[in-house]
Structure formats: structure tokens, C-alpha cells
Length: 472
Image 1: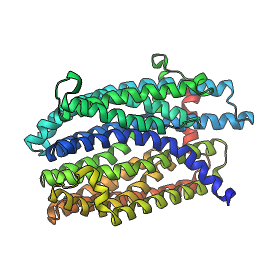
Image 2: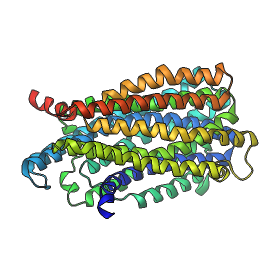
Image 3: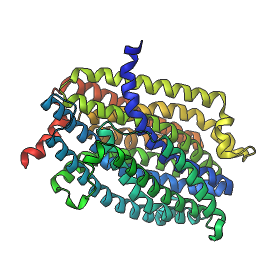
Image 4: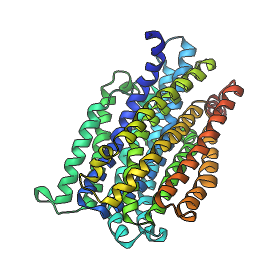
């Protein structure tokens, strides 16, 4: 039994630290939403919208540096094949340092651009039919959240570096501490404790930005204490090689656009739900946040499996990839089933932390209905993300972009509009259309991964890495 479980432990051992950082990030926005609930329904509606757009840009920014982990894992795998040992040789060390420098520079550029875009989105909200009272609350929150995108991306570069080296470490303590610090700062800025002005919902955005910076500093200390990682740590992005930056950007560009499409369809769904009123928007924001929390499990599994695929391919063991993919899906579907049962058996207990003991009846009723769609949402969206990670391990980052374009923009968004507005099903109709889009995308990606696995003896990943080296 122990031998049969060992491959699952390998996946979980790599996925758990990744999910830990993801949960640390989501814990911030979840705590924010909980604190908004103490202010009122308008705060949940407007603040939740601001957090959704923030998460969209955060997700896209993370996508630009996600390929770093695969590049590092591939470099390590080739080094092991070259030397026959697990210790990195000097060529591997130089390659890893160059990759890390380039990723830090890219993250800085993207972070500044994303923060600017978030502020601009705040001024564009009226163009998307959002009520004036929602816009008035959301704008200052988005302005306060914008600077936090920079340390958040630096943190993700360090995460990909550590994961690529298979030394991500435990972040449970950081995760728990970040929740507590964020909650304390939220209350301080909202209510004006210790002599500070009362900033209301905007204070929640400020506290989140402070905690993003704190989380980066803490994780940097963890990396510097690791005897292997500290020797490879190179944060001097200004010394980055341009060709290496472009290599990461070429690999990360399609990932960012894929993640962006994924976040965009949820943002569009939220704005469409918002046209049905503040109560519908508040209910959708709460259920979306629950689904987003659960989704981090699949992100961890996706990135962990992706790193293992790149390392396995780098060592020339392509025959092991199918079994790795199967085990990843088994872990994911097992977890999604347990969570879905919790939604069915105890919906009030699930929603109570966000809506309170005696929350608005209209919001509670709508949220209970949307929980059923959240179950399908978690299976379908999780499946597509696992496939995107597996394909990335094979070096294919473009198929995810193509599949999401078809599944989201050609199928999902029209389905949301047709079911929500055309059939007049309201918020549940929008979520039904959202699930249709995720389901179509998942089917396309499962088919593509099976095709790539059968037909690519040398992975696209290896080709992508070697092409710049050959040109140089």
C-alpha cells in the first residue's frame, strides 16, 4: 500500500507548498470580503467587484512568470541527465541564476503595468453599467490595491524558483500569520484605530497592499535560509540577459493570456450579474470567492504536476507522464467531491461567515442556489487548469490560449448572456452559462493533452529552451 501511495505523495509534496502560497493570497481577499460584510451589502458588492478585477490582473501577472518554474525544472532535469547526480553542476547553477534575474525584471515591469491598469479600470466602471454607488466605493479600493501587485509578483517569482528546484518549503505559518495581520490592519484602517483616520472600505485595500509586501519579505527570508536556494538566489534583475527575459516572456505570454481569459470570463459574469442589482451581485461575489478558495487546490496540483512533467521530460522519461496526469486528476476529483458534499449538506454553515447569522434574505436565497453551480464550476474549471499545467509541462502554452478563446469567448460569454438575459434566468442563468464555457474548455484541453502525449517524442518545452540557446 505504501508503494502505491508514494507517487501520490510526490505530487502532493510539491503541490501543497504551491497551494499554500495560493491560499495565503486568497486568504487576504477572503478576509477582505468578510470585513466588507461588517460594513454592509453595498460594501460587499462594490468591494467584491474591486477584488475581482484585482484578482484578474494578479492572475495575469502571475501567468507571465509561471513558466519560470518549468524552465528551472527542465534545466535541473537536463543537469541530472548530464551528470548522473541530483546535485546541480556549475552550468545548471548559472542557468538558474540567469533565469531568476530575468524573471525578477519581467515581474517588475508587469507589476507596474498591472497596477496602472487597475487604477484605470476604476475610472472605466461606469462604462460597464455599474451603479454610481458601487463605483464610488470601488474606485478608492482599487487605487489602494494597485501598489500591492508589485511585491505579489516578486513573491511569485521566488515561489516558481523554489518550486522549480523542488524546495518550496512550508508556508502554513506565513499563511496563518498573513490572515491575522490582514484582519488586524483591516479593522485598524476601517475604524480608525490608534489615531488613524476612518477609511472605510478603502482601508481594506491599503491593508492588503501592506500584507503583500510583508509576505514577500517573509518568503524571501525563508529562501535565504535554504542551504541550496540561497546559493542560487539572484535578484539583480537589472543585470538580466535580454534573450532570457524574452524566453520567459514568450513562454509566459500565452499563460498570462490564458489566465487572463479565465479571470475575464468571471469578471464579465460578475458585471452581468451586477445588472440584476446589489443583492444578486453580493450573493455572486460570496459564492465566487468560495469557489476561488477551492480553486487554489487545483492551481497547486496543476503547477506541481507541471513541474514534475517538465523534470520527467528533461530526464527523457516520457512514458511516465500519463500516469502522473492520471494521479493528479484522482487527487483533484476526490477533493472536489468532498467539498461539493459540504455545499449540499451544510449550505448555511458555508455561507454564514460571509453573510452573518441574520443576513439579507434575498442575498442568502440567491447564494444557496448559486452553490449548486459552484460544484460544477469547481470540477470543470479545475479540470481545465490541470490540463493547462500538464500541457505547460510539455512546453505547450499556446493550446491553453486557443482552447480558452473558443470555450470562453465563443461559447461561454454568449451562453451567459443568453441564459441570464435572453431566458431571464437572472444570476443563476449567468452561472449556468459560465459552467458551459468552462466545460467546453475542459473538453478541448483534455483532448489536446491526449494528442500531445501521443505525438510529441521531444517536448515543445525542450524545443523552446534550446532555440534561444542555439541562436545565441
